[in-house]
Amino acid sequence: MKEKEAILRLRKRLKELKDSYDLSVAQSFETEKQSGIKFLTFALDNEVYAWPVSHTSEILEYRGITPIPGDMPLLHGIVNNKNRIVCVVNLHRLFQLTQPQCSTTSRLIFTKNLGEEQAFLVDRLMGVYLINTEQFSFHTPVREKNISKYIKGAFYLEDTLVSVLVPEAFQSESSILNKD
Image (cartoon, rainbow, N blue to C red; front, side, top):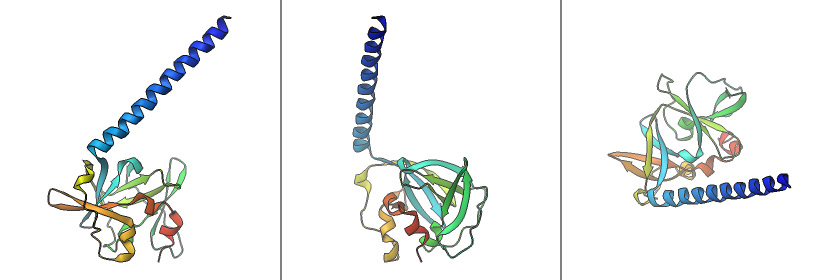
């Protein structure tokens, strides 16, 4: 009898916790709608880009990349991160920028929620900003049509134009890494 009561109390408590969690998740989505989206901003060459924090798993200092032989121009190489082999995408080449000179400010941004984990090598981090979608210009500020699918718009931080990257465009690792 005591065991059944304990199980019933436990089930009731679990339901309360689940309902509380569901409510907090719903409230956080509502807050995001009202206040904006958090973006991690970073520099590539002399340009600034934004990547949603919600698609970032971690950021590490650059400590070297293992090159991969073959003809995959958008692949810098691979890194071992917590016993996982992760491909590092060459955003400089994708966006037709000067190739990076890795330094003490270089970072690896690891993605999440895109299927296979990837990393981007960036010249330096700029910061995390909460951007209201009303600040967006959905006109894509790109030089070449073939890269417009990777950018969904832009916003200004002070006097700096920031191009917003589209996570879904990076979802298919093979389409990125085998792109000519």
